[in-house]
Length: 345
Ligand SMILES: C[S@@+](CC[C@H](N)C(=O)[O-])C[C@H]1O[C@@H](n2cnc3c(N)ncnc32)[C@H](O)[C@@H]1O
Image 1 (cartoon, rainbow, N blue to C red):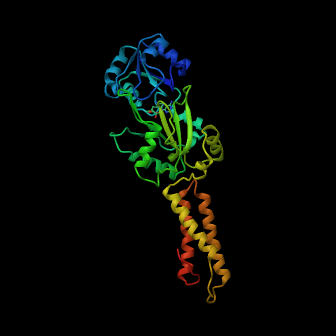
Image 2 (image 1 turned 135 degrees about the horizontal axis):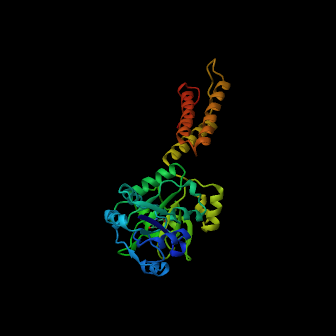
Image 3 (image 1 turned 60 degrees about the horizontal axis):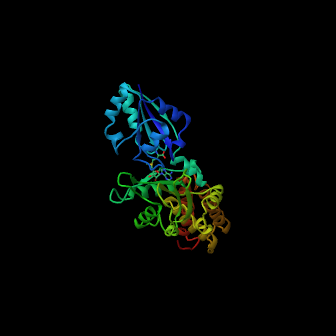
């Protein structure tokens, strides 16, 4: 007998593949896990569409009551319909593991997911860092979200922020409530009113909406019913910039102010700017022999080369970039300490 996880996709049974529909038909019992996702359907409409009774699993049943389901799968074919892709952003893999340990055959039918649908914004799916979920108020502070956001941005990566929901009590974050919480966390170096943000509402649905702007400009915008999610872009390729303008109606001002704000980036840029200014304004003193003006220029030339290396490595190898600008700073400091040049940091 087999336990099959069947992906529904982002909207309703129309998003199910031919293989998913076939697998559902082959099951003796069909359950639906609908508490981790808002879909444009419910157990009753799935029952009608599939021509087979679909029993909705109460919240937490898959996690807490998996032994019962696995026992059932030992003598009958059961299918569990899951919103989005069955194994994405949920803990359903542990059900498969437990079933396999008990000798129950398992099968997964994959499907469309919010994790890949976000590519419709034009942001490259290869450039996303860790995904996080913003918890509903009262559940947990948004600390993990902000830490992940900072780390992703330090690496120039985009961050997908899923928004927690409580289907039983019909509660879900909206893009606006999420932005407010992130702003109220008061960590402006990670997220502030100027942070370029992309809101996606009901992706894949007929009435989907995608909009990009600075966080502070979203306040009056109503995205309609959930599900909603947020993306905070990292470093942008010009194709991505074009896509945000065209597909997400992003104003130029929001893109002009967009800077990845990682700590390493900040240090690299700060040291780099300081060194470049010093080199520019350098006024070598009368030099004691045998040090000549040419010697000093050669050294500042080295420093400038290290700064160029810093810029070159900044995107992919930040530690190397930081080391390069530190070398530049060291050379300039040495010249100053030898009394050969005068400047202040
Ligand atoms: C826990 S994740 C479940 C992901 C699902 N397994 C999948 O593969 O898409 C649910 C969260 O994803 C986001 N989400 C799901 N569907 C969405 C959609 N169509 N448009 C925007 N956000 C969506 C919402 O933030 C929602 O709370």
